[in-house]
Image (cartoon, rainbow, N blue to C red; front, side):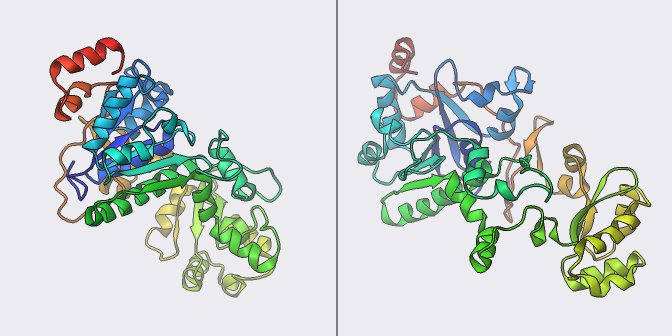
Length: 385
């Protein structure tokens, strides 16, 4: 795939969602992403169900367009292989706990000696320092620590897990941004940087609305009561007559007025910020319950009031705007997952390439890095690759 990073090579030593999403973004920007995996096992995401033709569906979705090599980093020769690959690469991203890569002899300092312009990104749960640096964690932990999970869900219920892994995908995107920024600097200065990205850090950054509320009032924002989390009747999900849902985002006064007038609720125009938001919401709910979701979608499609359906994922993938924008990626005519999220004028990208088989590109990548055929065979025989 062509793009602004068409001349950039990224070594991806990550596993699971955060790193895979980070390098998917970079691959969609045109980078040559080389996925460095453990021989015989690879990234665990390859075996995460549901399976399609023997491959994990999430692997197919998030690793398309990349190449795969196998390297045993626990082998001295394997570490040497990675060091040689890093010499010819622009950036490396890894998701081991702090200190692991150093113990393997291929940490930032070692690789920077071999390639001073290398951008090295460590993507971890809690960062390279602090009391939690060595702890294991997952998305549920990062959102929990950051105060975000506490605010998810209705006022009268427990916190609810989001269906999308907020910390993982936000951390992956932040890592991609950090890598791109440092690549720009390295191109000018000839020196790379160490990029320290923590999922907890990024989720805490995303909690800006909650932080601002707390700092201004001294209060804990109420679950389900924040203005954009169900606290306002004009920005809420409503059940329709067929048991499905509408997303109403009539936040600005002009949108609210238009919606109220269209629903024959003109008396509510001046009640947008009324103290009793539940009373206002009950009036809207009563009206929306009289027709099906799709009837309301059709009725309000041309009404400038920010109302739309709450689609399930199947409906979302078939949505005409989603389809028009190419947001479902297809490989060889078969849909596999999310399409490129960023588009460029004049981008002449061709057909998308599938996610690689484990070690599929080991020989071609090593040969391009200067390894002789006999040397590759010897490394394979020794278990180094």
